[in-house]
Length: 339
Figure 1 (cartoon, rainbow, N blue to C red):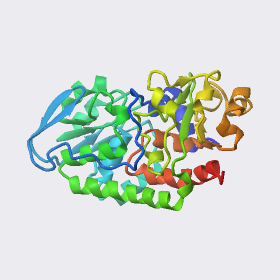
Figure 2 (figure 1 turned 120 degrees about the vertical axis):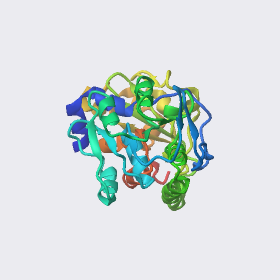
Figure 3 (figure 1 turned 180 degrees about the vertical axis):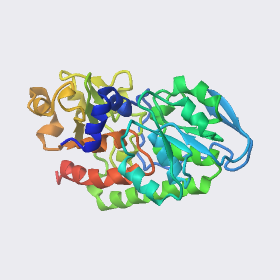
Figure 4 (figure 1 turned 30 degrees about the horizontal axis):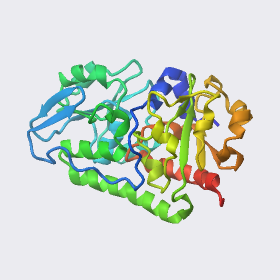
């Protein structure tokens, strides 16, 4: 099944969907406990404050009133904090994601969207006259940072591997502190984490089960759930990562049909968002001799992640997490089974 949004992304271009799903980093120790909000790293309402990033630093002199965002992730974070950005990106005429639309419907103001099909529109952002630019996510930030910083102070991710290593809760906390609304950030995180805690308590069969999540892309089969990436969706439900996840990183997680045995875990999830443009189609992979011999597959603990779940699972936000949870819980229940 291909969702209307995935079809629309395909119309914009396969490269756009690849960009949405791109987030890799070096491996790190995998979390095994439910995610906790990180310590506040900015001034939490005390200004001026220095906004550090891998690309440079900017100074924020006072609590901002006009916030611009450069990604759908940052739009969600702002809305979760009760802040309506003065401008935000979207791809062509694509509407915002459904969870974002729900938040926008409740907002008292409208967002002025700019077309980001060809990249970040610096002129549109500058025209919105922001006091600060929220850029905690975005695969072009290395190129975007300097021109953005010339417009307004930039709140970005932390550390060289922060684009992939920071969890959605990390990003929310950093943004909330810099924008002077730490209480709203803590409340947004707590609300999501309570939903996951309830789901974890209702599914004790998830506890301690190892899980692997992979995406078939045009050029590779990506082992997505490597340690050092945001795997909090699964670990917050009680799942763990298999040893292979700690042995791979963003430079070694590209698999081929010949190396797919590395995907094995107690539970295996695979997504095929590119359809026939993927390295291997679903039908071909599911009949591949190596794939069917993977213990998780042979034991019936393999399931497919639907297309519309793939982008928000790759780029989680405080608004998307519960939307994905509602759709993946039945899939996980079936994959875990009673065995």
